[in-house]
Image (cartoon, rainbow, N blue to C red; front, side, top):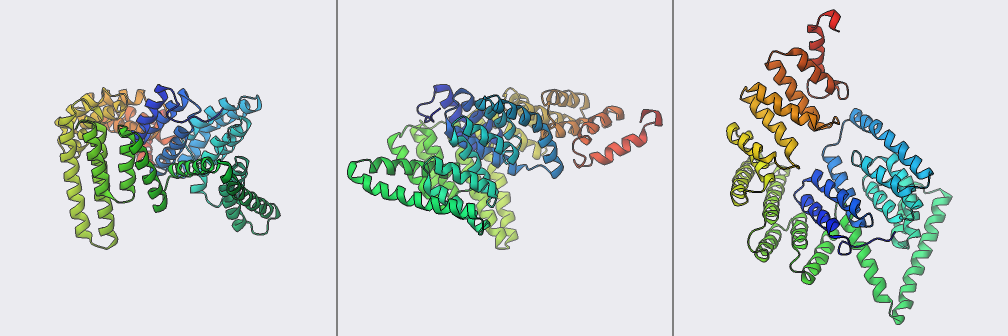
Length: 468
């Protein structure tokens, strides 16, 4: 099954892929994951979607990394999936095994047990690129894992990527300097890499040199795109490549947003904002996604300036910038809500900002509208419940929180938060048994969540011996 480009993919897959890119730029990681996964479901050969999917999954995992106990719980939840994937692999269904593992990787994209099975399935399906993508990303976060280095080196050599293969074996030999197998692999890789480069020189006279160079440049660009953490050189290469794409397709807003995002990553914020302004002009002056991107870049610039002042020990300056940032964010979101009244995500964001300022009635209005969005419905219901609780309208609060919990079957952070708030609502309503039932659900899987352990212990003490 050969890889296809985004341009070659079906329209539905392209739409989902582009939505994923836009969500990733806004740091809406959960939605980006859904979109990239959806694109792959429509077109499994769209490996670029898988590259971004892996990178976003890792970013989301690192941003909300569970406790050690939480990671054990996730591994236990994934165990049936792992066993099912191994069974599919043994029965000669590697692509189905890959699909199983990719769902489990959402919960922990750096789980080596899952990565091993995915790699085996990818090789069995003659899809080494799938294994390479996942192993390369795992290597960024476990750079001295001999298994990853050796396996990745073998895959690079099998697919003719001799330079990358040699680099893997060099790293492996630094870890295992006296291992004969590793030293032999490095020696062979160096020879193959040299032969490959010599072959390019010989091919120049035959006209295939340009094609070889183009293929290597494409591979390097894709490798840089897939990196979760990009170096200054990576960013400059990607900026040059994206500018070339814009020259070829000036009407493609995704390329313009991507260029602005890259400029911001290189702390070139003025150029990033200028790129967005040019894109807005090209789009006719109104584009909510471009407006969101401009806002995100300004916030990123504030964060960068705050970090600099903090590192210098200028606490007062950092605090002043933080207050300026918060004021900008509120005014900016308020302005965009008025400009784009049908953007439900903005309604939700504005509701959160209003809640933080204690403007509960106005926040409720925004959350009630935002819940129409499938993407924001559960979060909006949760926020509505909290608002009603703070206004002591406990029956309304319980109703909203119960709706949210009903649609959150797994004990993820959102379900824990909703159960905890519902427990507090029941306590305020004088229903301790119902409150204890909420807290116990959390306690069974995450004893360290907030003060839930104390609440459960007090609840048991308050019960009669017969109820224990």
